[in-house]
Each structure stands twice: as C-alpha cells, then as structure tokens.
Image (cartoon, rainbow, N blue to C red; front, side):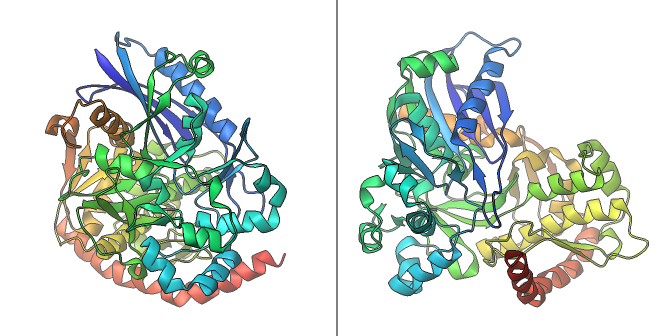
Length: 501
C-alpha cells in the first residue's frame, strides 16, 4: 500500500498522519509544545520544540496498533503561517516570532507612511499591520540587529523550518508568503522594491515553491531522527489554511467552509477574486498559485474554549464533556450574557490588536453554565460576521473542519447562529493532514485535480438550524455586532495602561 506521511506544525503542537493513496487516514501521532510571551504583544515558539515534537509524533505513529505495511511515497508539510524565523547555518537563531505577535505596530505605521498604505495594500492584496512579517523584519533590524545579521535566511512558516531540518533546503510556499506583507500578489513574486527600499536585504528571502513541488530528499540524519527512510521525497506543501482548504474538499471553486481550531476562519477558493481588505477579507494565493483563496479570519476561535476551561476549572482545565454538560444546561442566549471572543485582538471584520475578550450582561444569578455557553455562542456570533464579510448567501450549507467539529453542542449552536446547515467531516481535526497528502499525491501524479473523489471528504453528520433558536440569535447578533464599535476606544486606552506598567 502506498501512503504519504503528512506533518502538520500547528499553533499548539505537531501532528503526524499516515494517509493512503485512497485518502484514508491510517494512523496519527501528536506532541505539543509551549508558547512563550516574553513581553506585552510578543508571542514566540522555539523551532527546536517544533522539531522535537515532530520526532515524538512520528514515534507515536510508528507505534500505532495495527499499523499497515506501507510504502512511503513522500513526506508532505503543512504548518502555521506568517511566522518570522531566523535561520543560520546550524539552525534557528532564537525563537520564532508568531503570526499572533503584534510587537511591530510602530514599524508597520512607519512603512505605511513611507510607502503609502493604499499602495501597499494594493500590491499585497491585504492590510498590513504589526503582525506582518514585513514590519517584524524592520523591528528586528532595529531591535536585534546582531541576530538578524547572523541569519542566512528568513523563513515564514513553521513547516518551512521542518522542511529545512528534513532535507536542508530553505524554501516557502505561495500561500504562506501571501500572508506576510512580502509578496506581490499579482506578480506572484517578492516585493523586491519595497524590501530594498526599506534596506532589509532581500538576499535573506527563501525560494518560493508550489505546494506540490518536491523541495528535496530526506537526508540520513533526519532519517535516523524520524524513522522515515532516507531519500524519501519531501514535498514542501502549503500553509495550514491552504492545506485545510484542499482537505475539506474546497480546493476547487464553489464550496465554502468553516475552520474551528485554536484560531479560525471562513474561506473559499476562487479562479478570480477582487481583494477587499477594508472589509476584513484576506486574499491569499491558493496552493495552486494561479488560484486564490479568500478568507475571513478569526484570531482566537477554539482558543476561547481552552481559556474558559482553565478559568472554570480554577487552573485545572475542565474536561470537554463537563463543558458540554454545563453549557447544555442553560438556555440559548445564556440568560442574557454575551461574550466577545477577542482574547488576543482581532483581524476580521475589523483589525485591532488591542481588542480583548469580555463578558457583557453578567448578574448575581449568572452561573458557570451561562459563562460556558456564552463563550460557545460568542465565538459562533463572530463567525456570523465572517460569513457576512465573505458574502455567503443565506442558508447555504457550510462544511466544518477543525477540532471544534467534535462538539455536537457547538456544531448545533453554529447552525442556529448562522441559520444554515452545518456538515461535519468524518474526521474534522485531520483535514489539513489529508489536504497535504492530496497536494503531495498531485505532485506524484496520483490525482488529476485537488478533488480526487467524494470518498476523500466523507460527511459524518449534519446539523439543521432550529428556527426558534435562530430567531433568538438574530436578536442577539444585533447587540453583539454593536458592542465592538462602542468598546474599541476603551480597548485602546486599556492597552496603553498595560504598556505603561
């Protein structure tokens, strides 16, 4: 049996999946890693932690019970995008600066003043800000010049680094590059003039590869560490959003989907699309670089559930089953409590790194169940805003991928809030892994398109909206939608107080 090993370097851990040529997930392994916040608005991870987690996850995969005898045809990579990773001759130089890090706000403002905000947005297809790699590169030049000077290459995604560890090649893909502020979206090439104009030194940029391209072959040292045979072709793959889009069956135009993981988004593929960044819509290069993906992203989605699990458990996170019991024990609308899910700022339908989460409407009779359900509902209400940004027609079915799809209660709340059917993939947490395998399979000539067959994307169950609940959520959405405009100035003032400590 021929199979692909897919490695997904996510926001909280690395997943290894063994996917057959027929699209079946045969075995998996997973290992987590910590996130560091050394200062306000700074979010980092260690690339060496990524590599260690990959090795642990692969060890679990090899030890899986009833692992079939397979021929490994290739390794496919996916991972979190918009990272800033300084690569020297011997490895990563310090921690990676993550996509959710917004330390470079001042540099972003300066770049916009020097280059022109509208002009830069037109070139990149997206609004730029303190989370863009372009701004962080300038921040490093000013704040850590020695570390920057010691780097040979600037890598842009976690899977870029794992690719380098596997085969010694420094490269990135078009989907990841289009998130960074460094790619000319129309030309499908680096913004050479902008990078040189800022004095950043474009020689540090990696090669750009299509997602289905072989970046190299596994070298002996990596084979010893991972258990993958030396010489196995390594396919660069795509940033996580691109691979997930393919893995849910939305790699071809015509199908939209919702991703509910630590972060989240609503997205669809297009042959042609007009960027609309002012509305909170991001336009990215598809894993097939002639196409586009338009996405309305949510900075913290399932991460809200992880946060409230810890809070309600007083430091020891409540079990998911207990969260479902608590949230299911109160009525739709959480008895008048609304939750804004902006734990680390937001990117759509507005961009504000200072926005923060809050509960509105609590009283002396508010219960832990009300709080638990309001977090699920507030996240779903934010997804309703994202549907509006993407322009989805009323009532259209929506595919759901990501770990949040394992919760029947949350899935039903989404169907009710969005007032549309929700279709749950058979394994909603593995869409990115399957997508990476499809991309590698296309590179091997196994598939003629990125939608090989319906059997690659089985639907396990579906949820129809409850009309009475949807009408209640219509009323709540009007209140939810009006809250941020009233609170935005206060979020900014609170951020200034935090920074002044």
